[in-house]
Length: 616
Image (cartoon, rainbow, N blue to C red; front, side):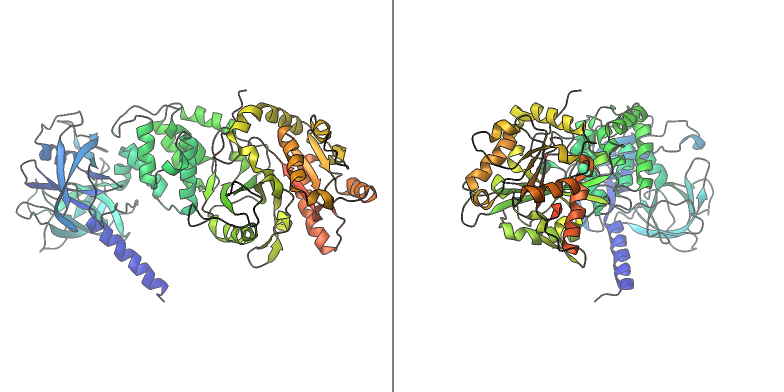
């Protein structure tokens, strides 16, 4: 087994190899080598504006981004494998400008139009404010050395134009001169690229000084690179998942399978969707995809505060009226709602006949990390990979194992204190004791309903045609339920006997309902169960408290006066605590022991269903 120090050494060695492999050799259109560049994203590299002008043989005073094709290769990994690139970002130096006025200039961004050679990946950019005496390395192509040479030296400090002075301190060895322009500067201390070579001292003979544009200036000059750098610096799986969710939210017309797989590709797609050229100086539309993406990402609790602040600064700089649109998004969020997480698990039968002897199911999962950040008409979800294969099927008894893996391994972002686990089930399985499924809760085996708030819902309410016909009735009843949050649950309509002919009429006007009708005769009759829950679906009942085993009226009254003597907003937690107490006290008469909570929120659906949009 490798030691930690060995692993760190391997990582540093790989970083340095990536640095070398990302160095590009840039050619004049006549085939002569004239300078360098380096890969900074999946298909983009940086070089100097004057290198591009030389490569395309154009005038020094051109201000518009040139259209010509530039040829380049990556000589330290794929020499001679030439690729075509075009200019997509252009910050030229104006003729006659003083040296103090060129901060953020003499920079060009190229987009590679062909597939990269194997092994080429973006370079590691680092920033610092302390450069003094840091050792550096650089690879360039001075005249007569088309295969490249290495030079080294020490960094000095910043000049008035934001460039950094660098010096070759050895008597022997190559000095930085023409042909090194556009090359990345590798900092030995920071183990990353701190800048780009831009100019060499020519006026003083014997002086081995040159200058670099620091990465802070390079990144801030180009909005595209700036955003990528913010999103990829110190990123982890939770941040990456938050970025993908924010993208899906801001670009809700794109199906989940079309979400770009890399952060660079997501940023590129946002620019494309908003029809913003990478070198365009106009600001983004505040109602565009990029603005929405940023607003949702900033409000995601999985994004660290320092990254959120950088994203706000980026938005203020590049998006019109960002502060006001950001404030509007915050108003749409739910700060007055208790912060809660939702884990949505959809269990749908694979066979047409879901009552087969050993039915199999397809299982899908999503997470809403904080309901406060959830906006009704936006697909604010993190998808969970329940299985290794999209076509994998499961039996109902497999689900506890899936839950164990989901809770202990597959959720890679922070959840709130209160976690609601919602099972979307076929009607005939709504009375299944899902809350009694045992899970390994980080070292302790427990019933899931004792550790988490468990809700069951009818999977058929996700049907798109059902939503088209029933959505407004459903929303109206849900709104009425929200308006009586302080009403005690024991005031709900109660049904103790099942009358098949009149049941639908009994529940038609109900908002919340208590069902104490599941005796052995009904529980063993799948048709009756389907009809009962079909009536709840047809009449869009938002809340049903069901006793899995019918109890006597005396026992029910005891439960009603004790366990159901709570407000609606307290119900979920009250039931969870009762489940825990029923095991501690070995008391099967407590509500939580066998109660089914059907809580049908029309605003929290799975991503495949049509989100219900309310026109206020």
